Length: 292
Length: 267
Image (spheres, each protein chain N blue to C red):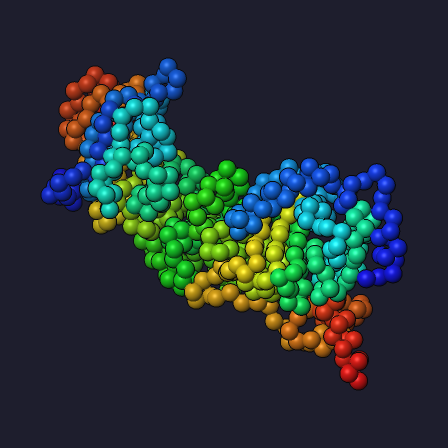
């Protein structure tokens, strides 16, 4: 917990309910969430509210977080793996001010993690909840524009078109080039968009001990993967699912097993690879320095 | 007639049994009181002028438009003759995707324009569970050859194809799962005459080779004569005359059929 967070925890905003949303709205979102947990991967419509930030900035995730957060929770917010980018900072401060909860950047200390585009590298536990911000919840959308039809396709398990998309990748590029928002099948039933996380993170979703909740604000959908649920990435028998790999190690902490961002450092073609998960990188660096 | 020899005359149950099929649009009649049997390997032509109810009838037969009255029974592989409108929706959709094919007049209605030719052909295979890329692609290439599209076009989008090629691609996409019954709505409409002739040739050899049953809607009597074993002539939503194709066209009995036959330009 950072010191300025502690002071903010004392004075939450006057005139606002705990965690911004009114209790009836939270109740409605919790009901949708319970249904989503009961039917893993199924998109539950909910009456999404206007939030004090634009669509696309995490209005879905923030509503789910507001509905499940309690005074005793410790919140971590990440954006592309980082705790210190605009989106993460503003959402973390939003809950520090409206709910007065403790916040942290440490994955292991958080009880509730709202994320955009990454799953933390540190394994999550049964005591944690991971909330994803989702721009487009419908994995079939790129192949079928009609909502009435995609709902029917989900209901009847007609998922052939998902493989048409992967087929196109292989036909044109020689491999499955989809690298983020890689479609998964949850509990052997519903095909689900894992939100735009890199496919590097897909295997972490499988049998994860933590509860995973997904909120799409513009599309007004909530879906979920309960703890210890099978999550399989779609693939072909002769083109199995595989994750990204790098030749380099993280330039800061030397990690070879984490998701790396390529950072351009000058205008002469210089670049470095660093962990996208800032907490993971910081912890590794700290423990290495402690050992020395 | 040599084509008739391909028909399976030994079959005991028809592939499709239609009784008193009626579709109303409010007070107006789409089609009314249509009854017929379609046997395995048979090509049935439905002819008539625009607005005579041909397409309504075809849509009702192909499970896309619920009838107001009457039954459409199909000889399913597991349960024999079954009313297709009594089937559960998943089974009906599975049936239309595997055992049936639908060739639209406009290939844009039947093709997925945003994905390559190979993916168009492979879609039905993937829909019924094919998960081996190499096999799917081999099947797609095989079918490209059978409908006379060159192999190197397999990764091209259908919108870069000519009208005739699009139509052939649509046929390949439908036939890849080995259907038993294909519905065709004016398959040669909008194509020029030489392309039409090649397409008809191709259709004829595919239909005979795969022993397909076909219900063919057309306003072009020449197409009907080339492909259809049997003809039904429709006017104002009713079947006014039916019989063997040559019989109907050479010796029309109903005044409307006579008019239709006599209005074809003789070149």
